[in-house]
Amino acid sequence: MKKSVLLGIVLFCGLFSIKTVQAFQTTDQQLWNTESIEGGLSPGVKVKMEAEFRFGDNVSQLYYNHTDAGLAFKLSDLLSIGLNYRQIYEKKKDLLVEENRPHVNATLKGKWLGIKISDRSRLEYRILKNKDNSWRYRNKLGLDLPVKWSAMEIQPYLADEIFVDFAVSEFNRNRLYAGLKGKITEKLRTDIFYLWQSSKKNDVWNNINVIGFKLKVVF
Image (cartoon, rainbow, N blue to C red):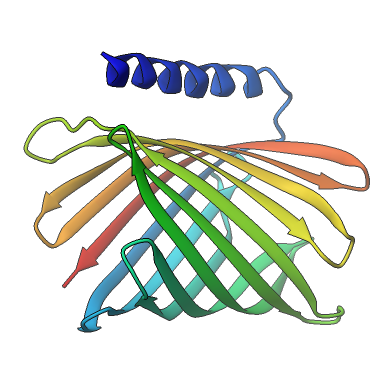
């Protein structure tokens, strides 16, 4: 009974949040696509590589892509640490801008009333062309709901991620996710989600709607 009530509350809050944020004016509709591969090197150590492509201007042009590679170390059932390096190319004012971004991640995991809870803290060092390097902190809280459907084990989830930019000493971005994870085969996983992103620039908040697709090969 408690689980049913809690699940209903979580779903209601998630749907209410999405419905509320859709009422704000958005500046773009986008499509994000990510492919990744992940595997174990030894007990407690994983390697992961991914590539992501983002299509903006109402999904009419590719404006961003990154590649990311790193290692994840499982220190306990509750805590894992990741060391990664990301290379980014993003189109800004018709110019392709490169950014290199090493980052370290600490992820806490737990479970409450059947809900899987994860909290990932990420510290990034942003190496930019023709601009001062800077640090940024990100925190992503995720909830995997305690239901799975069909042989694909489709599972709904909610997440929220905040960005704190040390260069300007402020919280200036938020991402809200609602999605479905699934298993196509034992080694192929998928994730389809809706994302609402709000970013602050020059004291103005701009919002985008994103549909995202992820494919991951595990070995």
